[in-house]
Picture 1 (tube, rainbow, N blue to C red):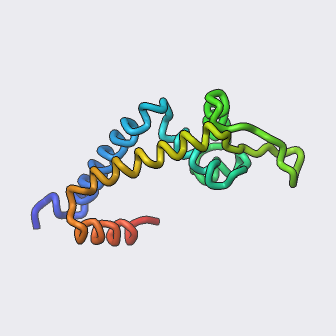
Picture 2: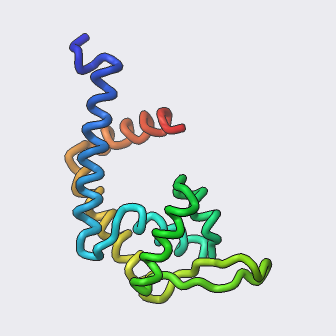
Length: 139
């Protein structure tokens, strides 16, 4: 077995691919001047159409303070708005604005196009195999 095929070599290859994917994600987000955290947060807010900051922090696996900073940045850009939670007037919900939904749709389309371009290097069979392997490795 060649060294790069050993467990450490596979880990290095996977980390190298993750760095490539992260660079591509940053480049994909550049037209909207969004960070990856902001893009992920906007996606969560759009999917749930009303999410508490604590829930956002949990979903993103970040500290509540960091979630507040991300939400503040999105609100300053007019992509989300805060409103009282009808179930608990002390709590605040984040909701997408129409502009936030528009930007989210554009980001999703750009990310899908970038992924299609990247994975087009692989045959359909190899993509299916890669998906199966990655699903087996994900927590």
